[in-house]
Image (cartoon, rainbow, N blue to C red; front, side):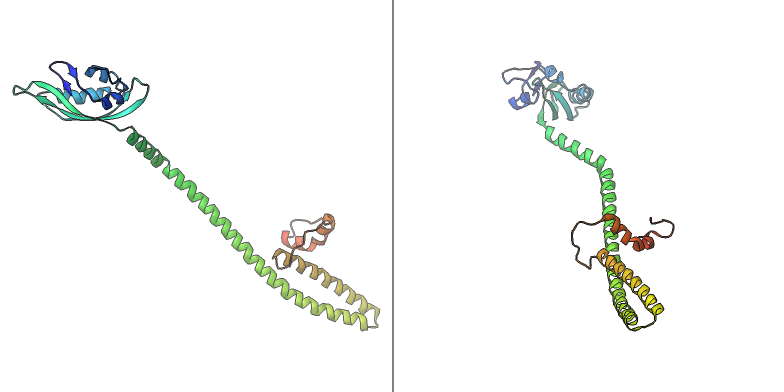
Length: 237
């Protein structure tokens, strides 16, 4: 309640606290205005000037920052209007003040969230696309493993029949040349058996046993598989 005639100001202790002013002090209107933030002072003065103006008699409704004497910056929402006599002289300006610092902090957080929303959506979309690509790749590898396991089983069955027949030919033939050819066929079938074992291991159809290995010998044994996998353009040495 600003008494314009006697240049006095009546304020509740809560209003004084918003400006960091001690309860036992009786400041004037100018003392409050002096604490208004520099970026808001013009807007505040304009709002009060219209309320004091007998021609306009506008209601003021203004939000502004104050740098309190206690060192705390707060947001204030002030609302009110002037009281005039019959001749149009402004006698007093009465109104209310509310500390809206919390609301302003929330509004600032919302603005910041909105400003970064597009970026966060893009990042999450990219992460989702990467996850979907990884899932598709895993499903593809699972399908390849299942296919490889099935082919290896069927190929193993063929090799067993071939190995049995070649072994009988080698045992029962009296011709040295035929025995030699049968032996070569058995060696080729053995390499095929190793290849199918590697395929089954790739498809996880066989139980894997963890044990020390001779790495050069292992790689040498996988020469055929690596040659077929890497292609003719990559020499396997």
